[in-house]
Length: 85
Image (tube, rainbow, N blue to C red; front, side, top):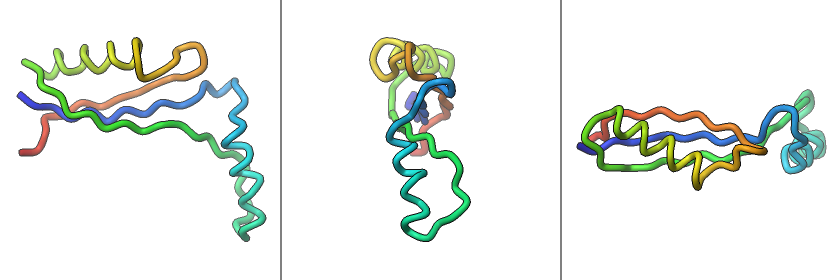
């Protein structure tokens, strides 16, 4: 069975996000006032084969822990659903 995972990886809130800070500061330069904070992360879409949704969730969890996210500086969240055919 095929599943689609939507994964969001973001820097921990307590850590400085220099890229986000630069973007937030640049907003006023392009006439977008009122932006106080920007956090920049990654969004990953994964198509995978698994025997069940639980098996797919376990595969995605392992991928996040071992490869996709650095748990020291990043947090992740994901959703898994059957893939549209």
